[in-house]
Image (cartoon, rainbow, N blue to C red):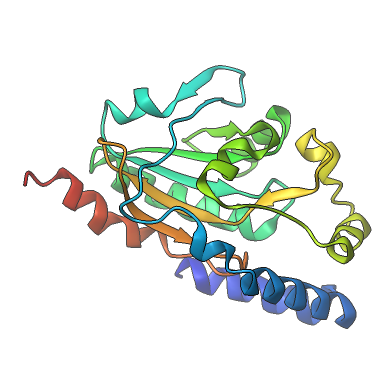
Length: 219
């Protein structure tokens, strides 16, 4: 089953059996509002130079994009948090394709604003072989142009589901990254970019393989 089929199945169950209609309407409306801002179109895209970053992994060790790019291309996925089931399904799909990506010389990282203990929990629960890096305050997400603040109505809805982002992320701003996936070439140029303000829509990880193959082919 493709990633989007899994996401659609979860969404159908959640909206049909779990969430009350007014919450479903709120989620749809606030997603449409984020789309309407055009922020996704202003985020970094193919041909842009990716911001360099050094972030701690879940064990507190620094990981730099420069050191990873010395080995080959870098696959980066921005992840909302352990509390987001859509994101966890996404991480698992990336894990299923991880070896194929590594066979093309790529390194993989996920980046999340959540605290290190929550990132460690994500890694363990999703059985990941790649690290989740801690983006404190969302500065790296901001550099890529994908950090946004949740609408006040959405904040209250999240609280109702027990999702307290100031606690989960360790900062008070109620901001998140839009889900995004990038492939960065060894020269630092973005070779693949996908940013979607609708967190229920994700590209299949297999879509990255042609880009990685191209980056491995001598000009």
